Image (tube, rainbow, N blue to C red; front, side):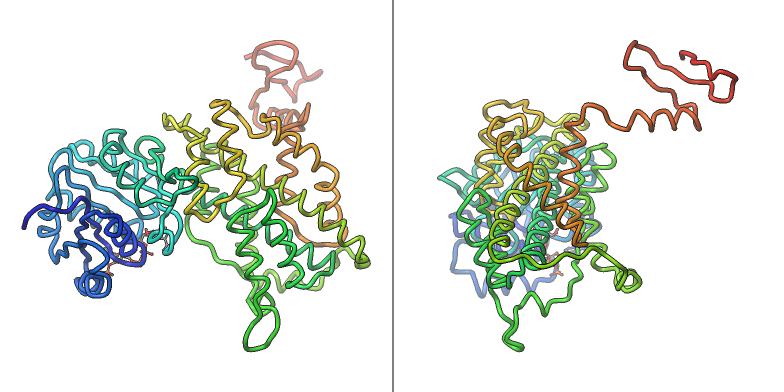
Length: 479
Ligand SMILES: NC(=O)c1ccc[n+]([C@@H]2O[C@H](COP(=O)([O-])OP(=O)(O)OC[C@H]3O[C@@H](n4cnc5c(N)ncnc54)[C@H](OP(=O)(O)O)[C@@H]3O)[C@@H](O)[C@H]2O)c1
C-alpha cells in the first residue's frame, strides 16, 4: 500500500468517525481503522464521498498507509482500551512517528505513556478534544500536549479542523506531556461549575421570583445578549422553553432531578486536592450532582424544616432577577478564576509552561464553556502573563465590587427560604476567604500544635514554635 495518508484515525466511534470526516472535509487524506472492521466499512459507505479516506482492516495495513512521520490518532475509551491500542500499534512505528491520544485520558496516564514512548523515540501527544459529537465534525476546541516538535507537525492540521473565532483557530499547544489532557480536565470541571451556577439561578428565579420556566427562558435569552452571553446560557433558555409533548407541561418538570457525572469533573476535584488548589465552586458542583442522586438520603431528609418567606411581588421579582444576574456573573468569574489558578498550580508542579491567555483563546469556540467573556480573560492574561487572579484585573475587580450587595443578598435570601445554592455560596466564601485580613487558620494551627505538636509560625518574628501545652505555664519552645 502506498503511504498517502496525512493522518490516521483508529477508533471510529462517535468521536473518531466525526474527527476523521472533519480531517477529510478539510482536504487531508485520512487512513481509517477500527477494531471491528464493520465500522470502517460503514464510514466509507456513508461518508466516503466527503473526502479522501484510506480504509484499513489490519493494524499493519493502517500503519503502511501513513506518510512519515506517521501521525496516528487514537479515539477509543480512556483507560485500558487506550493502553491496548498503544500496545498494538507502537511496535509497528519508528522513531519520529507520532501517536495522538484524542480520548478523555487522565493526565497522569498521559504522562506515563508519554515517558514510556519517548524512550522508544515515539512522540506521544495527549490531546483534549472538546465539543462532543457535533464539535468533532464541525470544529472542536483542541488542547494539545506533548512536545513542541510534534506540534510543529500536527499544529497546522489541528488548527485547520478546529473551531474558529474571529478567524483564529481554537487549537493550540498547551504544554508538554499531559498538559493538554490536564487543561481539558479543568475545562470540564469549570463546565460543571458553570452549569450548577446556572441551575441555581434558575431555581431562585422559579422559587423566589415565582416565574414559570417559559418566563425564565426569556430571562436567560436576555442575559445571553449581555456579559453572560455563552453557549450554556443559550441552551438553558432552549431547555426551559421546551414543553413535554406528552404532558404539555414544561420539559424541566418531567425530568428526574438526579444528575449524572462522568469521570472528568470528579478527576478535577481529586486532582485539586492533590495540588491543594481550592476549586470550591467546581467541587460543590460535583457534590451537588452526587447529592441529587442520593435518593435514600434525600428521602430521609424530606419534610424536615427549612426557611420560609412569602413570595415576591412582580416588582420585587424584577429587582430580584437583576440581583441574580449579578450573583451569577460574580460567581462565574470566581469559578473560572479557580480553574485558571488550578492550571497555574499544576504548571508549577509539573514544569509546564502554559500561556493562560491561549487557554482562554481556544475555549472561545468549539467547546461547551464557550462564552463571550473569555475574550476578556484572554485580554487580561495578554496584558499581564503572570496575573495571579482575574480579580487582579481592573474591570473584573470593578464588576465584583458592583456585585457585592446583590451577590450577598441573593445568598442570604436563599438561606432564609431554605433553597440550596452550594455553588453560589462556595464562590462567595472563596472570595471572602481570599480577601480576608486574618483567617481562623491561626486557631487551627493552635489546635494542631496542641494535639499533635505540629508547630506554628508567629506573625511577629521568624522561626518555628511549639507550645508545651501540658507543662505548667505552657512555655513556648523554638524548633
Ligand atoms: N462522546 C463525546 O462527546 C466525547 C467528547 C470528547 C472526548 N470523548 C472521548 O473520545 C473517546 C472516544 O469516545 P466515543 O464517544 O467516540 O466512544 P464510542 O462511540 O463508544 O467508540 C469507542 C471506540 O473505541 C473502540 N474500542 C473500545 N475498546 C477498544 C479496544 N480495547 N481496542 C480497540 N478499540 C477499542 C471501539 O471499537 P469497536 O467498534 O470495535 O467497539 C469504538 O471504535 C473517549 O475517550 C471519550 O471519552 C468523547
